[in-house]
Length: 350
Image (tube, rainbow, N blue to C red; front, side, top):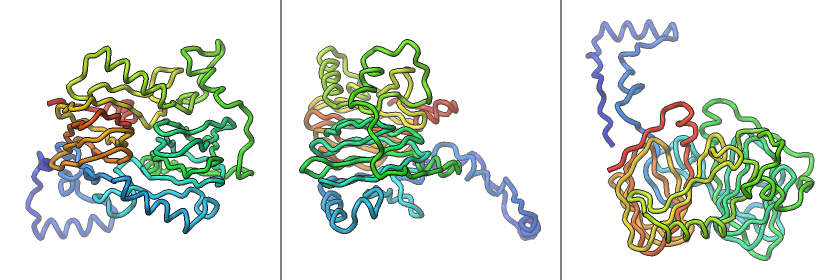
């Protein structure tokens, strides 16, 4: 990454140093000594490109299931910690990602928090999550929402472990000092709506005639992979392929046509077997999860080979291209909505 600066600070003489010491006592500092750091010529994320192989992380995840219960941990999650961010475990500068495990018969207690969350189901056979009184069953590839300040709990009534990728805006929320959290009076919140009610009301190209969005988040909270896969297949048959993204679609809020949550965007894309994308970069930080397939990605000067269930991150302004050895579906999420609303988002194609 090019980290050169358009500004070269002046030579620091003894006279300057003496002046700075007196300034420091007044809780002040000279901009000219810090301008190159404060105003770089292009993004300089602390996060670096990195990949987490599911087959390597899964044994640790299962081991954690023997070490601590969901009651003790509240959420049994292994954070995906970026090697470029040494002072705190997070996958990127503005985003958190981790792998959460819930074993058969377990319940992850009900709570809510300011941070918005998403789930991408990695493996399992019918565990559930409940959001604001409606329960939904989770299957691999499903994309689920837990919008800001909504009560949610998880349970596993199946006979197999369930694992999903969590994606949250913790780093951004905490940077803004706007984090709150609260427990529900009960470990398992009451189920007040029949399963599928939200999707029937808001997710079928229909909307109640008197509906007024109560928040900036989507009124549905499960985007089933089976339906998503059908759409990708049909669009692939219809063509054409985009040279940079293959077949790429964004998940939307059906009430507004906007992002599913105000701080996090989510996408899904199909890369046909043998497809190699042209290089692309943008200012958003993007976390990818390989739903199915096998291939590799060039991110900056690094090449990462990936397979189904692996996770990798493309930090801000790193050029990236993808190649599919077999037909591949990539899920991704990013901080694009925040950048868009502030007028900061930028992209570049090669």
